[in-house]
Amino acid sequence: MKRLLVTGAAGFIGANFVHYWLSQHADDRVVVLDALTYAGNLETLMPLMDKPNFRFVKGNIGNTELVELLLREEQIDTLVHFAAESHVDRSITGPDAFVETNIIGTHSLLKAARSVWLADPANPLPHRFHHVSTDEVYGTLGANDPAFTEQTQYAPNSPYSASKAASDHLVRAYHHTYGLNVTTSNCSNNYGYYHFPEKLIPLCLTNILEGKPLPIYGDGKQIRDWLFVEDHCRGIELVLQKGVTGETYNIGGVNEWQNIDIVNLLCELMDGEFAADASLAERYPQSPCAQGKPANSLITYVKDRAGHDRRYAIDCSKIERELGFKPAETFETGVRKTVRWYLDNQSWVDNVKSGAYQTWIDQQYTKRK
Ligand code: NAD
Ligand code: DAU
Image (cartoon, rainbow, N blue to C red):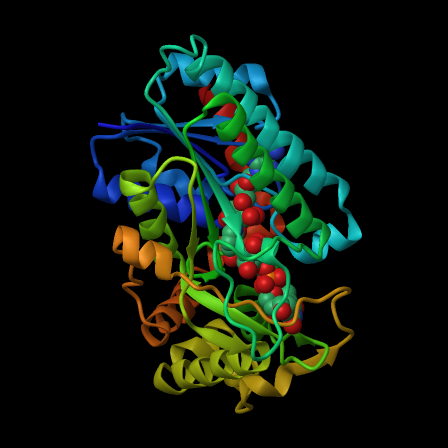
């Protein structure tokens, strides 16, 4: 039985991870540490709150003493680190928070892990520190370049990716210098449930329903490699179970799409949903799909993102070969499920966007403490 501390699990991937983990490892102890920034939503974790082996702690990864306390008190043997500032556009307008959370925050976790797990370096406690990182640390690819491997030189281009790269280096250094038992995974773009509607796919889905423009940066021909979020969680599970300490593993979907093609696909799928279900027009009267117009009538080309990376593609042959990883979801099925999820969970979207539920749940949580 494992005892996990999962940081950032009120956000998109971390939340999917803890739901997935407890569905597969029902007896494990899972403690979540999350600061509940704008991107964190406790509503996503509510179904787990009454489980005796689940605990939510509102707190900052930069609070080293708190992390040390949790590691000791909960006898944690596995730390899975998702907490981050994750949106590239926000890193361009406000990089400080990215340095604070992604670099200094990760370092705070490493310090806590070292002081508890390696208190007696000759007799370390059994432990694993898994760091969740991104393919963006490798920079950008030309149209005919081979995909990023674990050997690709780091060349981060945005304040976000630079802060993630710095955190990857700190994790590596704590292994090399102090012998901390670490693994790192670098994953491509995720999509799926509980995705904050500032990122391309959920932004477009929610804007179609609200009749708002679908902003396409630049020429829309930038390429991303999309993976269903639960497959990312499976990949991390394999790294935790079979990964070699000190190693890094690329995780990806081998599924490259131009942004404009993804947006057109989402529009077609939404058109199809409205055509098949008349009640959607009543629920979403602002949508062009409710007014006899195609969703792609909302596509609007806008100014490009500064320093916009042209193409990402992940070579995930190492994790496939060494740990047996294969995505379970095809893009066709995953994206359909995702469209359906956003149609069925507009209250989650409204709440996460307004922050209303978060404020309310925060008060409930404080009262319950
Ligand atoms: P997200 O923005 O949806 O969630 C981040 C979570 O971290 C939120 O719940 C937030 O409240 C929490 N958090 C932020 N600062 C914190 C702090 N100082 N202390 C404690 N909690 C804090 O992010 P995401 O998309 O779920 O990404 C999770 C991780 O995966 C990140 O490290 C990101 O770099 C990495 N990643 C994301 C993707 C992707 O496509 N989204 C792909 C590869 C890697
Ligand atoms: O590659 C992994 C990364 O994927 C993660 O590390 C990041 O945390 C995650 O946010 C994501 O970064 P991207 O910048 O690729 O994702 P985003 O959804 O912001 O944008 C995807 C592409 O779509 C990108 O080329 C920019 C473009 N875009 C985005 C938005 C929000 C638009 O054209 N219009 C938009 O409105």
